[in-house]
Image 1 (cartoon, rainbow, N blue to C red):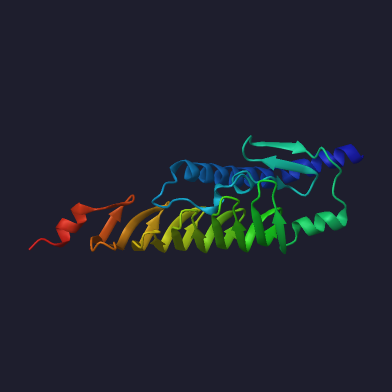
Image 2 (cartoon, rainbow, N blue to C red; image 1 turned 30 degrees about the horizontal axis):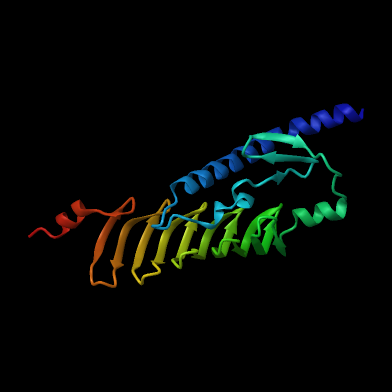
Length: 216
């Protein structure tokens, strides 16, 4: 009957649901780790707000998944009608202001930021760029509340790839990033004339590589 059909349907969807849970638990853990590691040097990304760090994802069958707890729960409020559910599942453009004072204007998919969009924080920070499943991913521009700026590539909520970081005092770093830190080949230029051009490891100049490259 109806009950047995529902049970069979749930079993058929189990592999897809497990994959969904694993994906978003991973994104959540990476976003939380990023938040813990963020510093003035600039790991700070737009995924640091609660709305982004704790995405609540709907499976389209009347349940929600919270990656903070790793659990699926039935919706406590009225279930969406066909029109509301279609709007939720559709890649769309929408502006929204959160209770925290944060404002997002851009593309959405399945209830999270996805595509191009601008997130303005109540504390003055701002991110304008690409998103993937609720976290910064792709190319973007981040303004910090203290006047610092980052322009470049992101990967799963962290600076990763080619990027430029400009401190509010005028110092500039241009080069490679990995996991939110300067890593690879890059050039730091300071307004006082100091700087470093060469290779970086985990946010610091790699003097061993520098010495090896400058041996006679």
